[in-house]
View 1: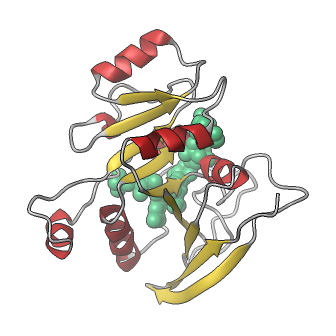
View 2: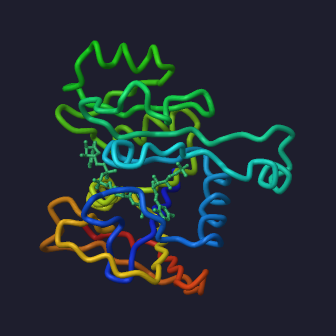
Length: 224
Ligand SMILES: NC(=O)c1ccc[n+]([C@@H]2O[C@H](COP(=O)([O-])OP(=O)(O)OC[C@H]3O[C@@H](n4cnc5c(N)ncnc54)[C@H](O)[C@@H]3O)[C@@H](O)[C@H]2O)c1
Ligand SMILES: Nc1nc(=O)c(N)c(NC[C@H](O)[C@H](O)[C@H](O)COP(=O)(O)O)[nH]1
């Protein structure tokens, strides 16, 4: 599986303000690029923190253009994937609508009645890990479902865990022309933070997009 993390951050490294509300950091051209990346992916993944904060749809917005470009007869949305250890996704969340398939990655700690509720809403529930989603096992299960190209849209907790597990192949960061501040505002990689060995990146490209910059990095193999 090829895993691309894509996120937009402010000039001071924040994914959102301290209120954790949906906030456009990207401009139009960058949102178009994200739409294309979604269209080119088999699935788009977020953590449940992003579902609770933004209620995203994670669908392709300009489906006609991308299906023509990809020579598809019918427009097709990528699957949606939510990392949600104990199932906090609300039953009326937009990611559970009929516009795309949705996989909910949970742990053994997820209550059975919540699992049933999600399945009734049409989601495929995959359990991996005891208290928290074991991302290595969960992504292997997704690969078994035919997902080869996975795009991760955040947030910072999920992105940190994916780096920690050594699962990220590529990082695309759009840096927008805003300063958000806030010591508790989410950043690109939150979690507990690394202290001894740090994921190393190789810069592939630097590009001006809108009034910001798009950085594309590949992730170096770790020695450990
Ligand atoms: N600017 C951007 O590109 C962008 C993208 C996505 C989200 N955001 C913002 O980020 C914020 C949400 O980010 P967040 O960090 O709070 O939440 P998140 O989306 O990273 O979700 C974290 C949650 O996922 C669940 N989870 C399950 N297994 C996990 C694992 N192994 N590791 C980590 N988490 C696991 C946990 O319940 C955890 O609390 C919102 O403010 C949203 O607007 C911004
Ligand atoms: N690329 C990007 N630029 C931004 O400025 C921004 N705020 C996000 N945020 C990502 C987050 O995951 C959002 O929740 C989804 O981008 C919403 O997706 P929908 O439009 O509902 O499909 N992403």
